[in-house]
Length: 132
Image (cartoon, rainbow, N blue to C red; front, side):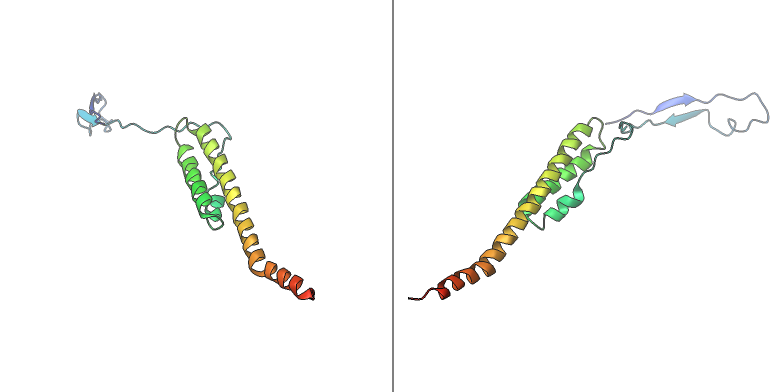
């Protein structure tokens, strides 16, 4: 996007002691650039849940990565005008996905320990106590 410079005239001073305007050239170029204005309601804060999303990657990679992407989306949307509601939804999704990843990872860890260590002890104990 190209913005055309605007020329303004600086008024001349009739006072001999006024050196502010006398040092300036007669015409100056002013370039006006668009600025991003972020409007948020007073006291409104959206937690993006990035920390829990990153931690959840270590428990369940797929759900953790999706949670991290959602948290990043919430982080980016909360600074855009009109993106506050979508940022809340993405942050909530990131939190739910991260919790699901952590629970899934804990269940998998428990099942792995059970099948690897506890189940063989139970089965060998059961077979050892039976006499033929």
